[in-house]
Image (cartoon, rainbow, N blue to C red; front, top):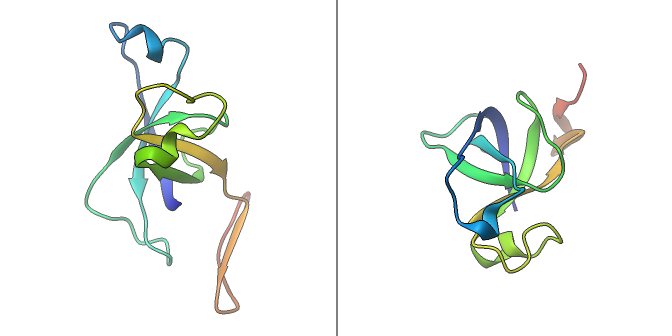
Length: 97
C-alpha cells in the first residue's frame, strides 16, 4: 500500500457500467515523511475519504481486492484513512491536529 493525500474529487457521468456507484478521488502520493510527489492518481474510494485526508491506497490487481471494487476495472483504490503515522519514533502525521 501507498500513502497519499486527497486533493480533489473527480466526477465522470459517462463511464463503463461496472464503474457505476464508485466515487473517484484525486490522490497526491507522498513519501514516508509526508513530502508530496510530482504526480497524481485517480482512485476509487472504498472507505468514504474526504479532501485533505491522508489515505492508504493500492494500485494494480490489489486495487480490486475490496468488496466495493471486486471484479471492477479499477487500477487504484483508497483502502484506509490514516489516523496517525510514525517513523522511527517521530510522529509524521496525526489526524485532527
